[in-house]
Each structure stands twice: as C-alpha cells, then as structure tokens.
Amino acid sequence: WLKPTRPLVRPSLGRDRAQALPSPMGGKQSQEVQPKAPQPTLQEASAKIDDQVSTLELKIQKVDADAKGWVAKASTNPTAKARAMQCLKMKKQYEQQRDQLLATQFNISNMAFQQEQADVTATAVAAMQAGRDKMKLQQEKISVEAVDQLTDDLAELQQDMTAIQDALAGSAIGGSVPDADLEAEWEQMQEQAAMEKLMQGAMAGSSAPAAAP
Image (cartoon, rainbow, N blue to C red; front, side, top):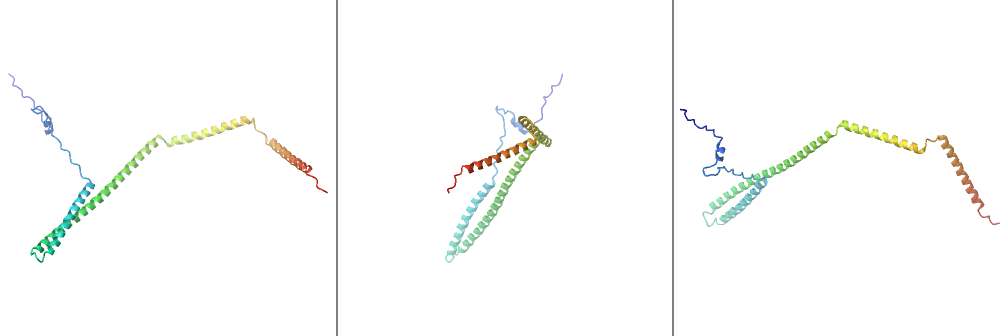
C-alpha cells in the first residue's frame, strides 16, 4: 500500500497577499491606506504665527492692565504687590513668546522669498534648456556645408540670369553700334541745334517794330 501524500503548501507571499484573500463571509479583506495630510505651506505657517502673535498681544495688554490695577490697590490690599508681580512675570513670559514667534516668522518669510527665487531660477533654467535643445535641432537640420552649397548655387544662378538678360538685350538692339558713328551723330545734332538758334534770333530781329524818327 502506498502512503497518502500530504498536499503541497505554498509559502506565504506576505501579509498583504494574505489580506487580499477572500474571507469566509464571501468578501475580500483589504487594508485601507489612510491618505497623508497635506503639508502646510510657508504662507499658512506665517498666517498661523500672526494669529498667535495677536493672541499674545491681547494677553500682554490684559496682564498689564491687571498689574496696574493691583498697583492702585497696594495701599489697601496686602496681597496687591504679590499679585502685581505675578502679572508682570506673566507679561514678561508673553513678551518672550511673542518675540520668539516674530523671529520665527521672519525666518519663514525669508525662506518663502528664497523659495520664490528658486522657482524663478528653475523656470529660467528650464526655458534656457528648452531653447538650447530647439537650437540644436535646428542646427542639425542645417549644416555649414549645406549653407555654403546654397550660397554657391545662388551666386551661380545670379550669374546665369545676368548672362541671359545681357543676351536678350543684345538681340533686341540688333548688334552693337560703333563709337565713331555715335560721335558723328552727336556732332550733327549739335550743328542742327546751333542753326535753329541762329534762325530764331534772325526771325526775332526782323519782326521787331521800327523806331520812330
């Protein structure tokens, strides 16, 4: 006869896995995670200190008024001095607490200012990095060799267009004219202008009225 074998027992995967197993009542056991409370900001801390300072100021005013009241009763009440001294002692303690809170508030305000400066610096650095990356991408698209080739091509195209325009202008004129012919035509035009001037002077003299005797 074969001995009955024991069922294999898998090792536990941890407490969390065990809590996820179905319960005998049919539901699943789950461990609820409590949300973390938000951390107070520097502005909230400064506002809270303002409230505490205001409360201490009221207490200082109250014990100061009480001390003055006991001083006024010193001649009639034998315990007035002790009570006044107690009020003055409490006043000093309140003043020390107020001064400590004001010093703490100053440190918080300074830290808030530094935090704002750090945020501005981080924003500026991020913008500069983004600009640098954009410039690198643009530079990768346009190389120095490509720009040189482009300028060479433009210069060559400009020379070709100039040659084409010169050729078109030469064909429209019908050939070049010798300089001697141009000089002869220029002299002829000057002679014609001189003759026209003389003729205009003669015609003006003949049409003038004769002088009276």
